[in-house]
Length: 425
Ligand code: HAM
Image 1 (cartoon, rainbow, N blue to C red):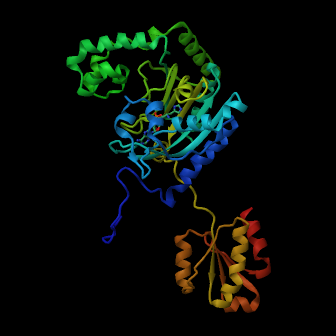
Image 2: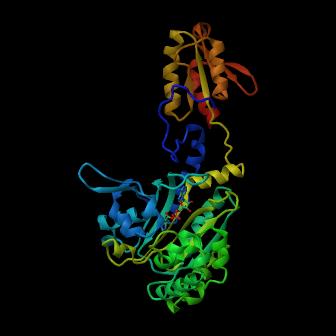
């Protein structure tokens, strides 16, 4: 694509425009989400993209990479420290507490869609502004809802025609059993310290579990024999995890247990899950989530359990494009070639009426030659062109040309709206 040599401004690195030609796919995702997630009882919430920084530090955890180095944070003119949201859970939980929703309803289920911001190193599938579809269910401790959500996410992908993904689950334990496991794993890493990358060496004391996320082959090799959380869960966590798996089986969800899924945000406990694909290279996580009992309380609300997940919309779109699922027939379009002012006076109200009836109708407002207008109709992939000039006006007709069959007929001007209602329906 030629770059305009006068162009002064470009978008910020890692942040892209979504242009009209890609919108069909975005709308498809949004429509599918609303259709499916609403049927599962989730209702849309929209929160601001800016929040007080402390909400994320408290909610996500100050030792996570997201909070440590990926947030867009600034002091505003009123000296408040603000951050662009790097994810949706903390904001949605804040809105839940602030609105007092828990006072009127013991179970609240939210869905959300929108931009998130993380200052990561951009590459295919990893951006600094990206979009998530997410859900949060607040007030249900029972493992059946963890399984329901995993099944809902799976159904969402399948409804888009995607089958090339896997569903992996884990239990991250709870306040009872995780500290003991963390210590065990930390001690194990300590012994391997000499073979670990600088990042993992830092993790040993601060956040050992995160070492499982490291892509460095030497670190992965060193962790081959690592103790896994699955064998160190307390009884309650083991039961919860067992139930999630039983419910998943009863729902017909294919999943694998992967005890190395640790998630990059600190609020998780018990169930953690990820949808991954091997079709997108390094950025293989299409979505992920889990249970976060304790977060609502941590953020100043009542002790209400929560579970949720988010899907990266750009990654779903990349996958659909990679699999050729992004081809949509152009919208049916009627093009009016109006020749002269009199024809335009007659044609404009007709176009207006059709548009108000939901028919996609277009014209050349500048009134160029018939040849040029036909070229424009071709460019817009119009299925029909309606030609009205002085001749037609005299006869009270329009020439209606089917651009696919090239068949032409005269239709009385009064009957034109009816003609299109017939064609469109
Ligand atoms: P997350 O795993 O950080 O979880 O993000 C969810 C998904 O967002 C990822 O699986 C990925 O598809 C997408 N994503 C993340 N970062 C980027 C990026 N830089 N560029 C493009 N896509 C990205 C969360 O955000 C949790 N809030 C999910 C959740 C909801 N857990 C409980 N409730």
